[in-house]
Structures are given as structure tokens and as C-alpha cells.
Image (cartoon, rainbow, N blue to C red):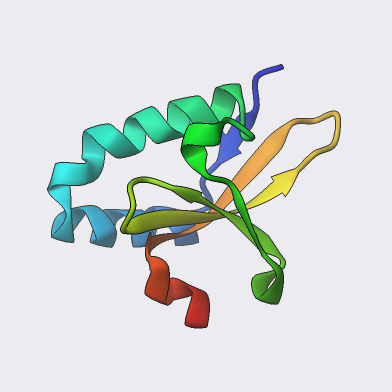
Length: 91
């Protein structure tokens, strides 16, 4: 099953700001999103539940992550929430 990645406008704005500061991560990020659409539980993504935010996190690399909500229903949707470093967990 292929998962559908949803990028709300609020996420797209954060994403643009993130890549203005980190253009070197664009290719790595694209690979991560492709892998996410194929298998959200793939070990390379290092999927992690963030209980305080009721969401999950996947890894772009060891420093930067993407927050997301996963719908494990038949519709197979993955909604992206935020992108940044580990400090975003404290907001």
C-alpha cells in the first residue's frame, strides 16, 4: 500500500523557511518523503511517537526531523506538521 502525504499550507510555509536555512538537505528530505510514502515504518526513518504532542516524528538525518500525524486507516494518509531539529519537540 502506498501512503498519501498531505502537506497543509501551514507546513509548506515552515518547509520553505527550513530549506532557506538548510538547502543542503533538500535531496535527503525528498528521499525521506519517498520512503515515507512507501513504508512509514521503514527502519531508516526512525519513526518515533511523540506522546506529548500526539504525533510522530521521522528522521531526515541525525539532527533534523519531521513531525507528522499518521492515519493508519484504510485511507493511508500521512499529514506533515513541522520540520526542524529536535528543539521543536519542546514547543
